[in-house]
Image (cartoon, rainbow, N blue to C red; front, side, top):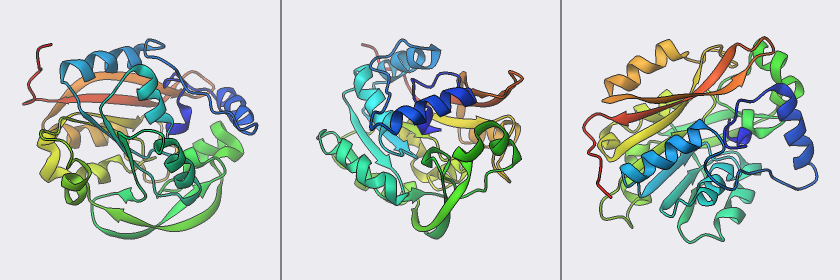
Length: 260
């Protein structure tokens, strides 16, 4: 959930409600540096070792992840993909102040086309999938669908050369936060995954969306594309302290670490 970006700390229902109450005043809470948790420390080292020069931020919402990266000191290119209309304007306004940050107003998936996306009360839960019972139990009205929109879906393999055209040698970190659609993004990227040296996918242990692939279903496919575990970082726990979702970071097996 991109909206859970207090540097991706483990998130409880009260945290969501507090953060969204603050948002109502026009303030967005964003971590200003890396070091706040294990994921941020891990990415600090990973981006440096692999000399990542482009982060593809898929499911960017309003730019929280990009702001986090900049606050952490990342100076490379950011390309944010976001299809929900009410998020795009704010995302563009945020990115417009940064010459190294581009916005693409569409979704990524396995096939090109159009599809209906469910827009939720708080748009960090918006998804092509339908929130299930667990979403209602944990996140209450925040995950309720308030409208649907027809959005464009592109394949990452088809747009990759265009969005990285300013880079002589793309060294890409692919961050995916698409609310149950990450595997579709990867399936549409296969021809270009040799440029994706590392990736981040939000994995479900207890799925909050209907028909959401769980970790045991998703990981074998990711591994089949030539990736190995680099780290696993909790995102959300249920009220009984059981893991709901975690961020999975993986590195490409044939990617060389660059010396400083």
